[in-house]
Length: 227
Image (cartoon, rainbow, N blue to C red):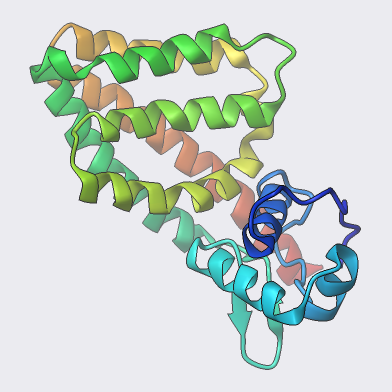
């Protein structure tokens, strides 16, 4: 298991605190894909019981951030190109519909405007994780603007795995100006009421991210196969 940072746990339930600590290290890349999550080691590192560790790992598995394999234990999932395709297909279904609705209904747009303003306000020295989360917050704002609890819950369930995918886009996210420009273009098309242009720009944006991530995974898997 890679070294873990034994950070102090927050004053919540021990299970919640451990889950949050592990989640943060998975989403930041400190625990990379394939890293084992061994109960005994986690108990020792964090000073918690096996029951606490098991419950935390169950929560992470539900979020798509841990995977249990028979006879191999629990580990951080190693996503595949098929996983990426599946995630982005569902993203597109939800987000493109939301963009069309927002183009027709101006009263729903303020959360998306606020998300773009938040992206614009991020300093040039911001970490890539800040940019990643602000990027995904824009897309979540699109979907949440529909005010459909079930649609929002479905999208929220994707976010953890999407954040893992975005670990492969660190270089692209370092270009803060380009990230802001792409999202501003989408918002401008929505503001103009041009649903076709908004969905075209959004689809191109999603396709580019999907292809970049899938390309990294293909190269990784090719190297693993021949290494």
